[in-house]
Structure formats: C-alpha cells, structure tokens
Length: 257
Length: 268
Image (cartoon, rainbow over all chains, first blue to last red; front, side, top):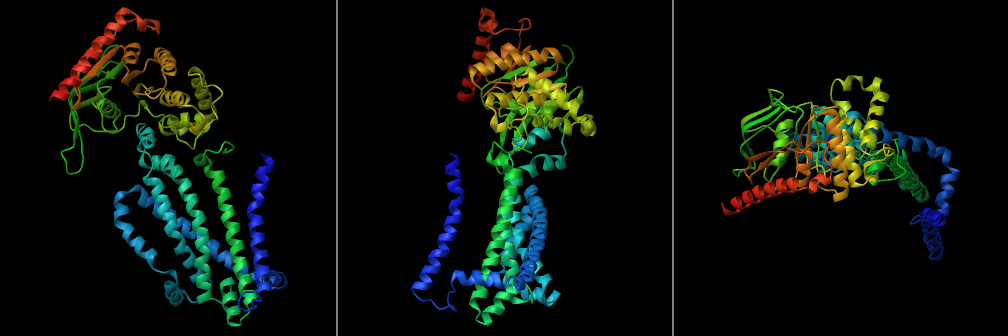
C-alpha cells in the first residue's frame, strides 16, 4: 500500500516533467522560432538569470493578490451569510449580484484607474471583486442547505438565531467556503494580472506586457510560469487548510481538531 | 403522578402550504401528562404525533386551543425540554462528547459557566456515556459510530442538561430489534433514576406498552386523541413481561383501535 501511494504521489510530478520534455523535444525537432514558442530550458534560464529583477514584481503581484483575496473572502462571506440566512435578502440582492458578476472585470479597470490612479489600488480592487462571487454563492448554498433537523436540535433548547448561525449554520457551510477559496484564489490572480497589464508599472502582469512589446518571448513565458507556480502554491495551501478544518465533511479518520 | 404538567386542550394545527388550504395535522386534540409521568403517543402514520411534540416543545404554535407546560402557555421554545428524534441528528463536525455537550452551551445556567466548569460537564457527559453503554467512544465522530451508538449519544444529549421534560420522536425507529430492546431498558433505567416527564412518540406498540405509564391513541389525520390507556405493569419492567397475557392483550387493544382509526379514515 505504502509503495503504491508513493508512486501515486509522484505521478503529477512525472506528468509535469513529461510535458516539459515533450515541449522541449518538439520545439527542437520542428525548429520552432523563439518568438513563437521558446524552449522550456530557455524559460528556466530566464527565471534563473533574471530572478533578482523578477523578484520585486513577483512579490508585488503576490501581495496584491493576497490582499484582494482576503478582502474578497471577507466581503463575500458576509454577503453569503446575509443571503444564505434570509430569504428576503436573497431575493432582494441576488439579481444585482449576478449583474455585477456578469460585467467583465477588464471593463471595470479603466474606471478604477480613473478613481484611484494606476498602480496597486485598482489591482487589489479587481482581484477583490472577482473573488466575491464564488464565495458568496458557496457560503449561501451551505447555509441554505443546512438540514432543518440540525437546527431544530438547537432551536428546541431555546437557542437564539445567532446561536444557531454560529453553532450549526457556519460550521455546516465551512466545507462550502473552503471549496470556494480554492476557486477564489486562482481567480484573484486573474484579477491582479488583468489590472497590472492595463494600468500598472509593477507586477508580473506589467512585466509580461512590456516583454511582449519588446518581443522578449522567453520573459513573457517566465512571467506565466511564475503566475502558475504562485497559483499552485496558494491552491495547495488552501487544499491543505481545507483538509485540516473540514476533514469531518470528507469523513477522514485521521481528522482531529 | 399528579397534576397536569403538559396540557393540550382542543388544539388545531394546520400546516400552511402556499395557495392550497394546507394540511390539517391536528383537530381538537387534547391530552394531559402528569409531572414525572412517562406517556406514549401511538397512532397511524401521518396522524400528527410528531406535531404534538413540536407544539409541546414550542417549535410550532397552535392555530387554536391551549398548549401549556408547567401551568404556563407555551410561547416559543421551552428551555426545560430535551429532545431526541428518529435521526440521531448529531452535528458531524463535533465529536460524540462535544455533541452531547451542546445543550450546556445553549441552556442557562450552564451556558454562562461553560468555560469554567467544562471539566465538570465533561465528567457528567462521560458518566452518561457509561450508563448508555458508550464508554470509550467519547472522542469518536458521529460517522464513526453505528446507528445505534449515535442514537445512544443522541439520548445523552437530550438528558445532559437534566431537563424536566423529555420529548422523544420515534428515537428507536431506525434501529434493529435487539438494539432497540437494549435501549428500552436503558431509557427505563434513566427515567426511573431521574423521573423527568416523558412524551414518547412511537409506531411500536410493544415499545409504548413496555415504557409508558399512559398511552394515548390517535386517529388518522387530522389527528385527535381517541383513547387513553393506563399501563398497570410494575417497574422495573422486563422484556419477559412483554410476552405475558395481560401485556399482549393491551397491545391487541391498541392495535385494534389504530386499525379502526385507519379504516375510518380510508372510508371517509
């Protein structure tokens, strides 16, 4: 069993390395020019040789994303609780929320720039706004689908609405919240990069847009790699947190508080 | 066994159902249960048995008639009740013992002392676990327990805050016959040592006759109480008693009343 699980765990790495190998071999075989598709080895070379220049942009993008994400999750959770625990709020607010969410976020950036100038602020807000919706929907679903029997247990004891929300509703919707966090963190990067490519002088999005106008294609791809890596790292972090906090929902035997 | 600790007097209840007229669950239902008495309610399915428990616990309000507990009209959830349902309704994110401690986090005076007295309360929960035969399973999560074990834990949760009144809604309905009989004995023991007022809703006539002092028989929907039986057998009752002639006769009588009620409903 042990051996098999080890093999399983290394499987995704094997697939990733395999993809890079195929990419490298195909590019060399067909002599694909660098400005169309650079070799993975070239991209890694850029990452290594220019890391000092890339680092501040990386931290800029990371910080922007994380701040936007945290803000979005807080706002989203609050709206989700309001919508999920009250039919009235749900009916009143849901159409507006869907309307907001249907607006492409790129279209909002110029307005944000108009209000806040270019730079970090519009990027934070874009990633914040983009995070809200999945969190709202999931938290609201978690609350709205709470079994009435579970609530009755507390209601019969004379528990207040707040007791029931804290005692049953919120713990019950935690698995939903965590599922949405994994979606939200990847979306937050989308928001940040959109804003950075349109209006910023720092950040990976900005690096990529400048590199592409200089036809420095390996650098563009290096930017992509950094984004992918950060996305995976944060996704993994939340997957881990999810397992820790809501293992009960997956009935993990090793789960304990 | 005196007084009228729980009183329902000519109670009507109709569940609202949108545009329709709604479903009449109870019509002119009356019953009373003395303090410290063990009452059972039996009747055809869908006759509003569970509705009575919801009225008594204050989860539902009657459309007409009086509902009183301890000589006071019920308005909103009564805090002195412990409830157990057919589903164990354990909170899946809490261990068994934490589930049992839930009422102490809600009900006063325990609530305000919960942090200081947690160790004492846990001790109390452990003692209860022992009486119901769950010792050693305190830290398990609900899904790691069998249905019978979850139901035992649910019983502990109904009892932990030493309620004056215990409302049991088919708590053993989903269990196998042997586990069920085990739990009858446990429940009888617990009742005899603490003497809460109990209302047990059940389909199982043997269960009703084994456990209760008084059995109410309900008609088909809309439900009302059509008969009340005193159960004369001495306590503690044993399973062997349930096969004695007198006991079987009582069950026969109950059975006849219920099937008459069902036929009447079908004819109507």
